[in-house]
Image 1 (cartoon, rainbow, N blue to C red):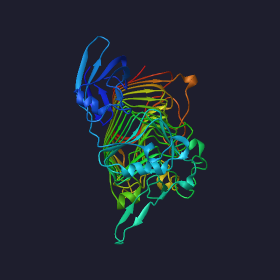
Image 2: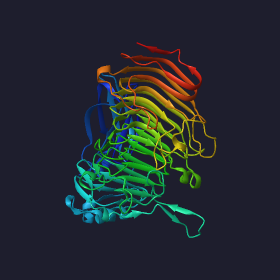
Image 3: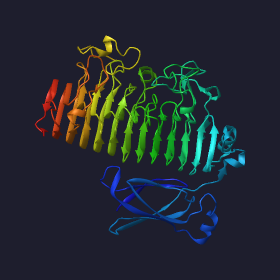
Length: 543
């Protein structure tokens, strides 16, 4: 089986198999990793931190990690299928200038001592190209701040555990006026606005070339704190993320588990050239606002092989609210999501609603959505502004299991204090002005949906700004049995009653194309189409 090295680090690799299966293989493959360097190189790199020169394991994942490697070392990686066919490729891990063990700086790793100062000292002492190593243990900390050109390695069994006392967390000011009185310096964000927020357990501000790797865990510990209590009230500052990168470049995360986040789990903000590989993100299903991975005003983001199971949207692609678009305009562009599994959550991959600077070029493929409320979820509203243009968004080769409402597009989303006003919710046309958002081409193809409840497609465009083009192609949907089918509201807007067994609801769409769409299930309603200028639904078949 052909494969590629999706990412290469100093002590790990990420492999992506060239498979057309969704997230995982039908049959496991055997992987052999073997060091191929000469004896001098072997002597130089043998240590307790990388004791293994060769090993074999089996996997069914399309994307997987190989950990505990030696830096600057040649390896041969072989993938063998059940039929014996084998492909071998060679790779050299990144070099490393020095390995700093946090225990040498006084960190205890006993889960009792506050290890913040010791680990922060190791980070600040790390030279370019160096690695800060957290071996197995529980490292109790308040927020740590990363620096450029370093690797943070959480080895297997290492848990970076968040302190539960919010008074020990520094506050990042949302916006600070520059000394010249003409500019602003933005540090923090809360739901699309530049508001004061607590620093995150891992925080990077204006840094670059950082890798966070390993089989360890970053635990926000929110279940043992008061972050989820009275969560809509600001206390000192707004709740922190667990991982936050603002105004950064060339940031990568590999292998780690991130869990129990106080709010959004991983939040890249105004950052470019980002990679997230083979991560596991878990928050309780009832934890508030605990989105999994939310790139906001970012460009060139790659998310591969990641498992997310959370209390809100699994992924939410954003670009701020109206103030940020007017003063610090930065669209989100070029987002790739592939071979991921997204569980529970309100939406599998959501776009919006903090989206005033727009989102373009999103490609989601070979993913498995399981038990989420919605699959593709787009949400915007009047007031996001004319720069809130969503376009060229493609979902393909997806398998949705027990996703109640696979495709939802909502331009009446009732968020924010004014969300239920007539301005936002009025379904009569309003003047098109600087506050009017737009949705361009949205495409979903080659998708299998089982366990549909409320509706397959629900698209609610604005009467003054219809959704430009919605293409649904090669879709097979199986509705849940009528006796067990839930009644839900596909889109969060006023004057829209909960529904059940609806095939397609489309209002205010310029062009709607449904090609090779098969819907199976008892008593599934015919499409309800209103305000659609051009509808091609001959390819819609009911079984």
